[in-house]
Amino acid sequence: MEKNKNWEEKMKDSKDLPKVVKLAPNGVKHWGGETMVVPAPLEVDEIMRSVPEGKLITINEIRQKLAKKHHTDIGCPLTSGIFVWIVANAAEEMREKGEISDEEITPWWRTLKSGGILNEKFPSGPDMQIKMLEGEGHKVVQKGKKWQVEDYESKVVKV
Image (cartoon, rainbow, N blue to C red; front, side):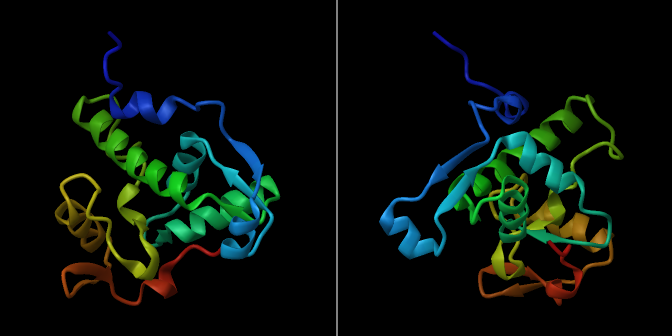
């Protein structure tokens, strides 16, 4: 029986990705494009690593960067979101094991959902992300049951 992969192994498993696919007619209608890239997890990690302190990125911007890189109309929303989650957990797993330092870690906390919303599926729920973002000077406010970075639009890395 095969053992379950840890987060780092999941991040490093490309599964024959990236892959450019032609969208089915319903996908064309829904997404407004004809081609889509299904990224590799390490590509998502690379983009997340590139976000400097004081700046932010949303999953939508990550998808736009991937589409631009692969000359497609869109980046896959499903796999991009899943890979952001895997990268965040892999980064914390490697830090906890002492495999990487605080300076080497992928700054996953700078990645937000659309609308500047924090990702409740990130390590430690929103608590650690709030702490890390506030430590970099961002103001995090509660919006109903969700948390959002105030004025996040002015801090998002441009694609």
